[in-house]
Image 1: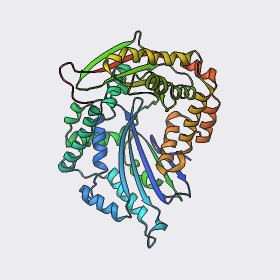
Image 2 (image 1 turned 30 degrees about the horizontal axis):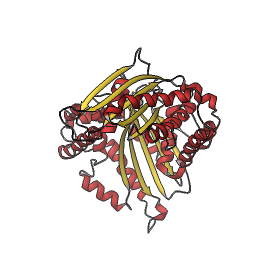
Image 3 (image 1 turned 90 degrees about the vertical axis):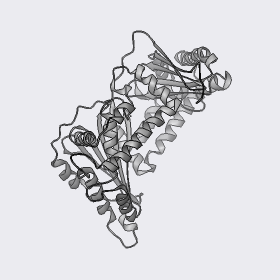
Image 4 (image 1 turned 120 degrees about the vertical axis):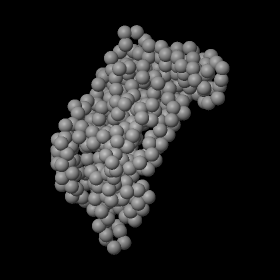
Length: 419
């Protein structure tokens, strides 16, 4: 049962006796901002690396390792217009230690010290750990650029969601990351504690008794959480935007952005039938039968009511591939969908949902996503909702989608090096 333990801080304990570990997930949600997002990511990486007691990464890692391999990690992602920074603490349940040591309590205290008492020098993070983590962030941003398929989608998103926070990477820009200093990263950390919407989930075989510890930590912070909205549908452009970039690639990339949508479950099935599974129309027809693409897939962004179709194409085949992709969407709009296509899509979604409760982190993430969607639902109930979607529902939602953006990444005319 979720309860508020501070202004904008939710706490949800989940008990599941089948697990032998204790997991604590703390998620910070704050509006995406190209300037501040890299600072947020950097600050989070640093506070998961040391604290005022264990002042180096080596000291902290050694201590956690001594607690039967306890782990403390952080991830950075985005959902719609929101940057998500999530910390994960995992420990073995105390009764499985050799002598029944209370390692969980000690690991939680270490985590809380990281969260509320970071190692600060001269009103900023300590220089050595800052330099180390800043390089990590820059390497991550660089890897996004070097992965040309992901980069094409990211570049397309800048046009599809122009003037919306969603157009930015979860890590912000390389230029802004390079400007980071120990002092402004520390300010970003304080801003997160003050202004982020925070959700804490614990998954354990028995109650952990940590609510009061988090409650005490946040009681000492003046909280003014942002007004976060995860679902901010993106408006369709008055005319289709067409963007072409020339880069050092051997293979062209094409991303088509569509906007529309009604019911989330019908739209997800539409996208799945279109291009999210091996039996999807894009894979079967555009890639296999027509051999127009090296890959061709769709992805549904429910928070923005958008579907992105991305493909790897030989440059001479770009127009043919675009036409073929649009034809497959038209086939769905005309109700040219077999019962097997619908069944395969529903089965794929069902199999995915059946795995939700296999791991503690997946359980915590499921409950967090339910909060973001403003609904309380089980995976089984989600399966029922998908199974209730009819052919007419899929056709109806497909007909709401209109082409918003065409993004093409073409090989540079004077040089071809990377695929």
